[in-house]
Image (cartoon, rainbow, N blue to C red; front, side, top):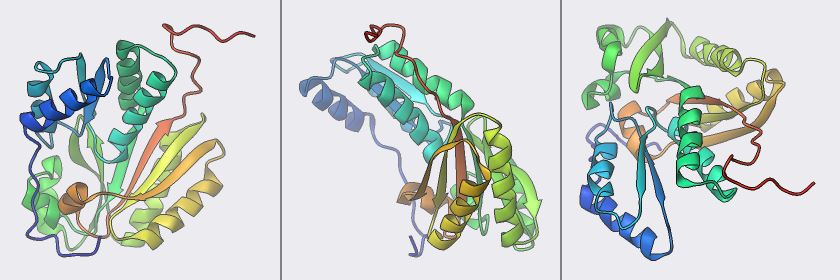
Amino acid sequence: MTGDLSSASTSRPSPESFASCYSSLAAAGATGIISIHLSGELSGTAESARAAAGRSPVPVEVIDSRSIAMGLGYPVLAAARAAASGASLETAASAARRSIAATRTFFYVDTLDHLRRSGRIGTAASLVGSALMIKPLLHIVDGRISLLEKVRTSSRAIARLEDLAVQAAGKGPVEVAVQHVGAAERAETLADHLRKRLADLVELRVVEVGAVIGIHVGPGTLGLTVTPYDVQAPPPDCPQPPH
């Protein structure tokens, strides 16, 4: 993503859009829907989903991920894996919520200008005046973007991201996503370093985030999401496989 993002904007989907989606899924055979969305502190998307859920012909569990990008993606994967194993709607939704509670997201931005313009900067607003002099490391706390540390150079910021991932991983098996906006080379370098440092790394993804996130963080952004790898037994409401 290398285009000019300065004049771009985003808008949440309407409740009607969600109602149409839920009806289509029900018509295709869905008996329940788990609808997981980016943080309600940053977008009204989950609010629109809730407004439509009551009109759905099948039960809908709307979940606020309290995060963005793969901080949202990992809970979706957790719910999908549980559902594929035969879990009930409630059990699959619980899997998503456990993932949300355990997942950490950190990111580096070249400039805070995009976050400032979009109003998503949260408690990092005090940095705006010195944005050109520092390289901020941010994280998601209670669904909001908050300042974690101030670093003087981009190389130090990226090295610090690596350390934060190692700390967040702890001693158990983990999955990690390295995310970027127009910074593929830096993302691959960071991923290579993490593969060497994380002994219990189960899976590592390198992905470019979509336009909606890119508009708000700007080109050059590099992010990390770390989540525990859950070697799941079958959910409680599923029969145990024969030995």
